[in-house]
Length: 166
Image (cartoon, rainbow, N blue to C red; front, side, top):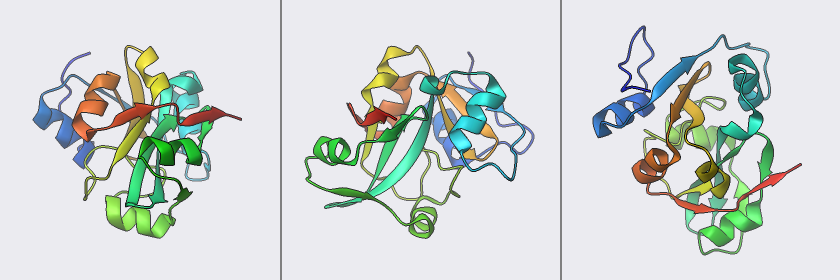
């Protein structure tokens, strides 16, 4: 893996943040199907990766406002565990239009990096079991691969068991 340079219009706020931080990452473009509904699963299938290794970025409303959850596409977000990781009691999935407005990204291409406003972030602890993980680079059809420690450091995230299978 080497420091990737933006090429062919692939520069996004997420890739700019990684390049600025001088961390190693690799970009993985794939052909996005406009009819796809499960964006993370589509990315995993297109790149030939197990669902546990690709992470989706979800945004939820909490007592302290919006917060970001990064969980494997293989499962779902445990809202109660997510709220607890943020020292709260409740969380609910945020409205998509609000999420797009606050993050600057479209649903299906939301990256935990390079958002308009830095939000509290929790990364599922399963990410620590991999040398590298994949997550959205900020647009549909483009994934970033980097060490989980890079994502955690750049977002100021905490890790917790917030993903659940099923």
